Image (cartoon, rainbow, N blue to C red; front, side):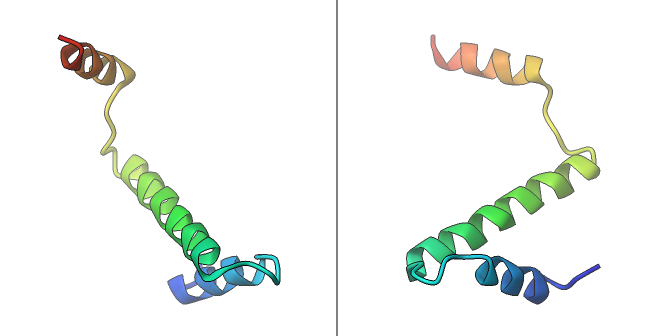
Amino acid sequence: MSTAKDEMADIITRQPEDSSYDEILRELAFACIVQRGLDDSDAGQTVSDNVIARNIDSWRK
């Protein structure tokens, strides 16, 4: 398993040479958010589609 630093370096390396600072940060943030979601899913910390649908319906009232 690679370290967070290794993952970040890989993401940065894959960016086009003319990438801006903001574009690189956006890619790093996206990877972080995806990893957090996968970690939550692995830990069983998810919400079912039915619960989400009920929540959205309640917002419409």
